[in-house]
Each structure stands twice: as C-alpha cells, then as structure tokens.
Image (cartoon, rainbow, N blue to C red; front, side, top):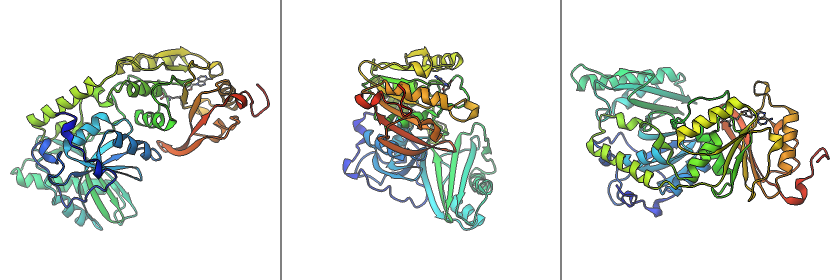
Length: 424
Ligand SMILES: C[S@@+](CC[C@H](N)C(=O)[O-])C[C@H]1O[C@@H](n2cnc3c(N)ncnc32)[C@H](O)[C@@H]1O
C-alpha cells in the first residue's frame, strides 16, 4: 500500500466524522472502511490525548494527512478505514489510544445499553477462542457505575456470539485481551468503541525500567511539539530522568514511527485480521522504515542521578537511537552552539526532592542561555517563581491526574543575565 494509496481528501480536512448508525464491520482490514474518496463514507475514528495536548495531536493528524480532523475535549476526531486506523497506531506520537466508533445510542438503563450493544455485529472481531476486555467511563448519566456498564456490554457481546456460534463463547481476559472495547456513557448516550491499538500507545516498547515519575512517552512527544522545537536546533533536557524527552525527540527528529518499536497492535488479533490485512500491515511498516532519516541534531540528556542515566542509556539503546548522556547538576547547564531548546520536567514535591534552591539554580542556569528557547512542564508554581521573565506561552496540561503548566520562554541576551533576586 503506497502512501498515495490512502487518497486523502484535503478538502475534507477539518470536517466532522460522520455519525455511524450501528456497526459496519467487514471481513478484512481494507474493506472495513473506505480508503478511496468517492466510495462509502469513512468510519469515525477518535484518537485520545492528554488533556491540554489535543492541539498537538490535531496538528500531527493533519501533518500525516488524515481526513476529517477535528479537535475535541480529550482527543481528536478523524475518519478513515481500518487501514488508516492502523496507520494512526503506527505513526501517531501524541495519541494515547486510537478508537474506532462502532455505535452510539441512548442508554438511560442497563437494558437499553444491553440492547444497543447487542445491535452491533460482533462476529468480525471475536470468535469463541478470542478473549475480551471492556473498559467504561460514565459521566452525567443515570448509569453511574462504570463496572456495571462494562459488565452489561460484555454480556451483550458474549450472548450474541454464544447464539451465533452454537453455544461456544469468547471469554474475558483483563490482562492481555485480544479485543478491547471502550464504552463512554455521557448524558445517557452510550458510545461503543473498539480500541484499535489494543491498549495505551505510550507503551512504545523501549522502556526497560522507569524511575519514580517518568513522563508518558505520548505526553513527552506532545510537549516536544508544543515547545516550538524545529527538529534542527540542538535539544537539551538537563533533568532527563529515564530519558523520555530526549528519546522521543530523537525518534521524532529521525522520523522513526513510534509503533515500529512495538510487537504489534490490538487490531492484529481481531478475527477479521486476514492475510490481506497482514500484508497491508507489513507494507505500512516497510513504508515507515524506508522513511527513517539517518541523522538528528545534537540531543543531550543530563541528570544528577547516575541510576537515572543508566536507565536512560538502556532505554535509548532499546529505542535504537544514540544520544549524548551526561551526569550533571542543572546549575552546570551550558549553552549549546548554535543556541538550542531546553525541554525539561523538573522534580517537584517532597517525594521527588524538588526544592526552592534547585529552582533558583535552574533559573540562574537558564539566565546564561541567551538565544535559547526553554519549555518547562511545571507541576508546581514554585518551579517557575525564580524565573524573571514572562512566559511566551502557558498551557494547562494534564500529566496523569496532575494539572501542570507547560511554559515556554525565549531567553533574550540583555535580560538573560538578570535574576529575580538580583544575583548573577
Ligand atoms: C520528574 S523527574 C524527570 C522524569 C523524566 N522526564 C522521565 O521521563 O523519566 C526529575 C529528574 O530531575 C533530576 N534532578 C533532581 N535534582 C537535580 C539537579 N539538581 N540537577 C539535575 N537533575 C536533577 C532527578 O534525578 C530526576 O531524574
């Protein structure tokens, strides 16, 4: 399948994914949705993102020339066949999940939910030998228990297949399911999705070990986009921990599709994943591999903790990128030549030993970086208090459950050396 073969319609960009009345599953990856403009309407797809980073995901989907791209709370709608959903799993750096919408219906009661889920044809996705997990979220609805919603949806799937398969039925596996469903009930309206990736896409496959508070890979990728880094200037993370920011920077700079590092995605375990679908998946991977650039600008990760650096080195090795790692205190942060971009996630809170002294040292070090750009993900206002300049941008983003600010600064020559406390 060539990139041209996707036949994206640029005129459709920014449009709304059409609603889908009931499921339209087919027997192969290609036929599960159109890839040609002018054929049947594309399936609605939804990629989820950390709150506050939807704009980064929207831009990424547009750059990758997906159709029907429209940002929403918590993610971005787009449209396409399953081959495009598969491409999204392979290519997207900032998406947490890629969901294929199967059906949306009124669900004021458990029975209505059961009926709506029973109207979907489940046979393309599961046989009796498949396993299933259903995850659910309820908001502002008569149905308030997500576990109950997951259970009733699972019952609908299993009962339908038991009837169709003459008594045999798929079983539940919460740890390593073949098929992952996601049910979102909001204002008494249930929307049933298939999780195309089969789980969170932050699991790239390169994390051997983590420290206490690693950034998710998908969030690190979003922060890099939002930082204003152009993938040409040097990039430094002076508190790199397990190396997530520098590693994601290198993958992006070299155009290494993040999904290439994974063993596979959820859709590859669906019943409809036939030989044609396997061939298309292989071709998508080959195309992505052929695009990899050999070089990247200097990317440097440093940290005060030698254990963090050995984890970062190992993670980079598994990711197949070679970077510069240094053991250093943030106060010794040196300018790069040419002036680059600092993207970092300083520690905060007692557990991670963030302290006012550390933030003062950091602000002073930034003051010596005339001509550089800085992007900080700050989980506490104390982190940025000693920085004497106004941020160029300040965006609220969620790092897990914690609301943080992503702040960006340009360090200008004259004022750079002036600290808030008057010291240099
Ligand atoms: C929140 S963690 C960074 C996590 C990282 N983004 C990741 O994904 O693993 C903060 C890091 O700052 C480092 N750190 C703390 N004090 C430091 C200092 N004075 N100089 C340099 N690094 C420091 C810690 O060792 C820790 O690895």
